[in-house]
Structure formats: structure tokens, C-alpha cells
Image 1 (cartoon, rainbow, N blue to C red):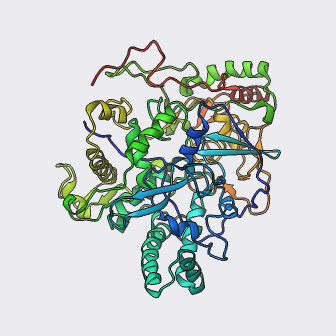
Image 2 (image 1 turned 120 degrees about the horizontal axis):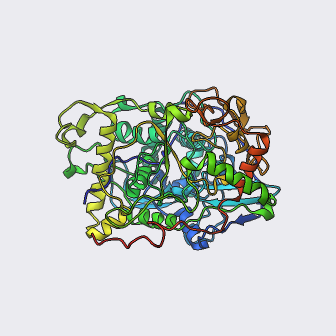
Length: 587
């Protein structure tokens, strides 16, 4: 069975060209009470999701546990340092996290050497690093599983990691303290440690100086994921620096509930197959891959793929419910106002965003139906246009030329999208072949999607159902609008600059934009940061205008409705369609 089509992902390991000033937030002490919502997951589901291995490997596990920050002796993995960059810290105790790492970082094992990665245990990111939210309000912390990491500054974190590695290489005392913690006492042991450390530090340095060089920092909750993945697959690991693109299109990670049920995923609606989507994410965030060997016999296209774990996380996401507004924390919902807002939503928004119980596709040949999502042309919705322009149009093939499809084979330069797609397919098919799966298992792995998928829509943005959207600030695909209220005004009246705060605003429903020391200021005038489009104003539809000019009363009614959905806590969208759907056919 053919595995996937264009392999893109949600996320990428990111950094910047040089160390730039980054926000430093005071840690919260003592830790606020955590409020979990009914999203139909057990505590074991959460604990596993927070720290499972998806195959990503950044640093040897022992080095990560004992590395110091660049400018002191505090451990880089400490709760205080993790909090500075917006990570959600966790105490030890979970069987999946015995060392008390922050959510989204876990241990992965590289069983056999792959490219620049020797066999061993490594620390690396997982889905929850960028898809887990906390909403702080009046001393409480509301945890939202599968929501975008609204406080985590991925770029600043990787910059800080690179700085810590460089400082340890150049500061003898700092390196000696690391060696002592790891029990490397003899001169020979210290030499071996330094060699291992230098190899791994070089990979992060490459991220910081080449892969994600940017014009200005992206700030919390945003990264140019697709460009980072493209750079890693076509430039860094193959050793073809000419293929590097500049990350100019930062986006916030999408929320994950209803993603397996949706017809298309990603902001730009580029994938249907869940395996391709999840595997693409791991290729972007440090999964070891060999893309510089000369032939497959020499290891070309080998990877540290953990495909059974990616299937398990997809299974869990199929039964993840969107979060319901916690009235005991954020205040009561005005049900009458929400009722008025629902009528407005059905009239002006549901044609794109859909509404429960949703409109579905017809059953495919496996008997599965999927939730229809709006595919709105960028030229119509008028939101930031840089995502379609970030990656350079053509790529140099180098040693990969002989392993492209016949129509591209032997060419020195090919369309970049085709180069990335075929590299990704080769890595994925190499990994899947080792599992020796049955046709039924392959069908399940691909989420019962018909492959190859239809052609990717050109320059559209996906409009998914809005259930639980209240828990996902900031808004628009690039996080350039701080709250739901501003999503309903004319775009010209939105905040042009705002501070990305750590407190939740339950009135306008978004981030508290009150500025404080060290907070990141998002400037919407910068390239990639536009908050134009999706505007409700007088005038003909199109060119950024999608609806009428609302009265203030109507805006607040819509906000109240968006707070109220889903109307049933813990409601899981049935995967494959409503119960009356015919059962899937045997493959």
C-alpha cells in the first residue's frame, strides 16, 4: 500500500541566526492549583501524551539532565529555567516521566546508529511540547490537552539551548562540572565526553545559525513550522545549504481535537493522511535521519521512526473532546446571550467553520466519513499571505537525485515541494517496510484515508469547527489577534501591537495584553505578523471582508456563544462519521 502523499508536519525544531534578546518571565511559586477539564482522557492518557517518545533526539539524555544554562550554574532543565520559556513543568512521579521533565520533553532510544546519532538514550520533544495549553487566572491554572502552547517560546528556548552548549564547550570549569556530574573522571573519559558533546552541539548550532535564521523573533506560541521542516529535510541533513529558506511565516500550532475527524489538516489544508502528518512533524523536530549517505545500502533514508507510538497518539486524539468553558473558574455563561450568538454564528460563520453535529463527507470506499472543513482562498479571507511564500520554489538535489521518481531523476534542480515530498516519502516508506504490516494494519495506520490524497488546494486557509476555540488564544493562524472580541471587529480597529501575556482574559476571551517587565511585544506591522483580513465591516465580501459590520451587542453575543461550545462537556466527535454510517469495508 502506498504510504502518504506530500509529507508536511505541524512543527519544526527552531532557533535564530544569532542570540537576540528574549523574554524572561518570573516563575510561579508556589505552583498554582491545576484544573483539568473533561476532555474524555484519563490521567494515564495525559501522562503518556505528555512524555511519550515520537523518535526525536536533541541531546543525550544524561547530558540534557546535567547541562547548565549559559550564564550560570543553574541546570538548563530546571523548573525555573523551563518556566522562563513558557514550558509547563511537572514533578517526577509519572512512570512516563521519572525525572520530572517539563511537558513535551521525553526520553527516546536510538537503537542502532543513524547518521550523526550514535545508539543511546536521548531527550527530545514530543507532540505536547507545542500542543498543550495552560490558562492562568486568579491563581489557578486551567490545563487544556491538545491546545496550542500559548506561552512556550520555542525559538527562544532553542536559542538558549544553543547558548548553553556553546558556553559549555568554551568554559573549562563549566565542562568539568558537567563531566563530574556524569562520572567522567579520567582524562580518557573526559575526552570521550567532549567528542560526544561536540557532535551533538554542532547539530543545535546548525539550527541556530542556518535552519531558522529570522529577521526578528517570533515570540511565544509561534514558529514557522513548515519552513523549519523543509530546511531540515532538504538543506541541513542532506548537506545542501543552498536549499535553506528564511522562516518568514510564523504560525501558532493548531488545536488537535477533531483533527483526526477532519477532512483536511494544517492551516493551509495540505494533508489528509494522519501518518504523513504526524511523521512529518517528527522529521521537523529532531528525529534522527540519514539523508547524506550515498545509497540505501549505506543507510540512506534510515530513521529513528517510532511509528507504533505515532499511531497510538492518533488513536488518543480520535477520542479527545474539545474543552468546555469552566464556569467555576472563568465565570458563568449568559445562556440567553449565547443563544443569540448561535443564531449569528449559523448565519455568518457556519458555512465555513461548520457547527455541531457537523456536515460530513459521503462515506469513502472504506465506509468512513470526515468532517467538512472550510477551504477559504487567502485572497478572499485576506489574512497574512507569507505562508505560501516562505519556502524557495526550487531545490538542489545533490546525492538524492538518483532516488527521485523517474520524471525527476538525474536532474540537478527540481521544484522544492517535489524534492521534500519525495524525501519524506522515502524515509516513511523505509520505516513502514520494517514493520511488515498487513493491509488491514496499513489501512488503520493511514486513518482509513483513500491514497493518494486529492491535489493540495492552492493558497487556502482551513476553517475548522470552533468548538473549544475559546481555549486557544492568540487567534488567526499566526496568532496576531489577542482575543475573540477583536476577531469580530473591522481589522483596521484591531491592536497593532500587544504584549503576549500569561494571564487569561475571560471577558474578551484571550490573552491579557497588559504589558509587564520582559513580556514579548507582538508587532503586527512586521513581515509574517499581519492581523489583516477575516474582517467584519461594511462593504462587499472578499479582499479580507468576510461578514457584515456587527453591533457591539452582536459581538458580545458571538463571544458568549463561542464560550459555550461544546455545549456538552466531554463530547467526542465520532471518528469515521455518526453511528448511522455503514461499517467500513474490508481492505
